[in-house]
Length: 330
Image (cartoon, rainbow, N blue to C red):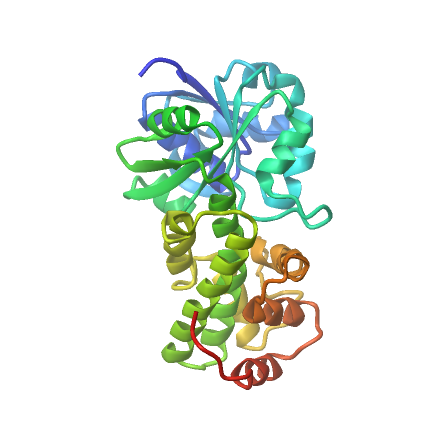
């Protein structure tokens, strides 16, 4: 295909570095932009991201940089920073984003202060851009290692979604496309909260049956929430919904699951993340507030939010969930 010869990745953490390498495998020239010059210099000098992905050699087609002028040469930009950092970074990038440039969010979360979805943040801070969202079951280390991975990308215009899926697909990363941006970003954000819940169940020793029940009922909550905000049901049955939920609730390699696991084992809230970022901890409260506003019942997510806010103990949360009124499954 023509176009998208040069792609920018803003954010040189583990996920940004992994994406940069896989985009290089797709035959693209990649600008891996780091906000701080010493980080970009270290990436160029070492030929790897020693702090986040040690041992992964940067592809020769990946060019680290801290200059906005370099990023301005990109025909599309992926932003690979945490959800709560999205507004500040995208605002900072504004001088480098050209008219109608696709800006692809990879964060899985909802902005706490504004209750904005990530593509809404991009639309507000980069009004000349064309927002898109990439999500799905993917660990940075798997993508970086070249293990087979599939994700989904969503953009409002069908032709843009198709173009981006083709441009970003590599021999090891397969992209599907959709126009349901809201469904893709809700799937990615809400599953993190449910991953914390699954980790709590496992850490508390409540058994595999309990974890399976929680995952299934949690998925029902996710679908109800998504429907209330205009998402399509089939999107939630795909990679960014069910697929990502299955991955994130099944292994301690998920930072959200590992965080819940530590909580379930009795570790204090202040240290349970072990220095890692668990996006679900920031998403739980805002997700519940938005659900209340929309009249959506999300008892599992409400329990997670209450635990994280210190309003409910884990044993009391389990008791409350098990003693809810009997009802038909939906």
